Length: 139
Length: 284
Image (cartoon, rainbow over all chains, first blue to last red; front, top):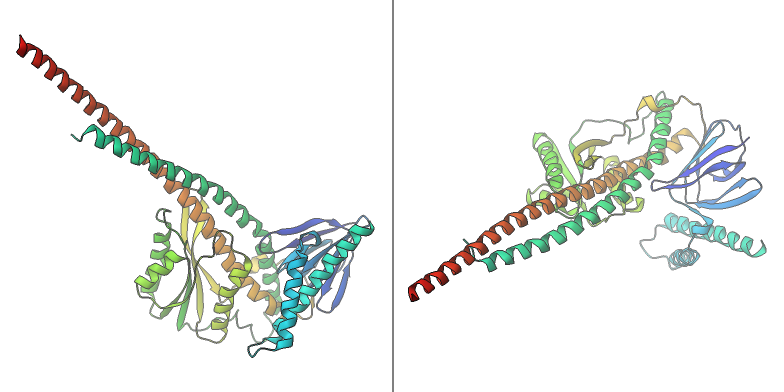
């Protein structure tokens, strides 16, 4: 029994395949979904998304969005999503530094929640990219 | 009759024009294909979102206090998101859109503000001295959803704080390569389509209200993004057709002028011959 899994953003279809398990960063914590789950609709937080297909795991980054679960069909409506191999690590690192600096220097017009979200987002993105690199070295 | 040299010059200048229009036609054709693809790529997201929204709205209907973006209210001020292309040379595309918005504004009793996306529409509205709330120019051929977010935030904020009560989008809808239709659609308040709800009882996390709060702004963004993609596809196909017509016309002109040139040349030769024979007979 497989899960029909799609990630779509406003700009493109990021991923579409039949998979065994999906682990997604739900609003109320990590969420592992197996086939035949009850209908569910949840918001996602910026984080790492893992899918396993025939024992092979692949990782993605989502910056938030919605996950819709129908029996045997999972659709993620993501704000933005990137497969691990698409992440530009240098850019993510830049973004992280910028956000850190902004939080530390505390300019008058600081929108602290936005800066924190930006920081968390770039850190997660890096984590996903990192994981892929390590995997490439060991495997 | 113009001198042969003048005619030759004209032919050459038109030939140069043909080169330009032909290239523009080909560029527009390839951009159009890409724009269409992009519009197609955005479709699954839009469809899914509509379905989810319909479902949520059906579920929340019984609940108290409608979400501000869903609730209709008496209209004191309307805003139009007026989407046109940045560049011209695309036939009547922008003019038709301008007319649609213009006629709508004139037919309303209440104040209408303009949010101009694209230079051609902005120029038209500022010439007509209509209240422009904001303008977004130079979004290019490949706008990202990020570009649209600013526009969406603007209308959502103004709608929520009550400075506008109704938002419409006006853009050239892409029907086919040869046809683009100026279209006006409602953006706010959001009206879910009840036919799309699959009547699924979801478990909502955290709550249905929270999901709706997050979903509605995305939905508005999507609506604008979609209109923008259609505009780009329309612009390129309109330009392609306009340029093809221009090329055809120019080629026709070249044909006519070539005929004229040949006639003029023949005339000249005849006159010269006559002069020579005239001269010879005078010598006899």
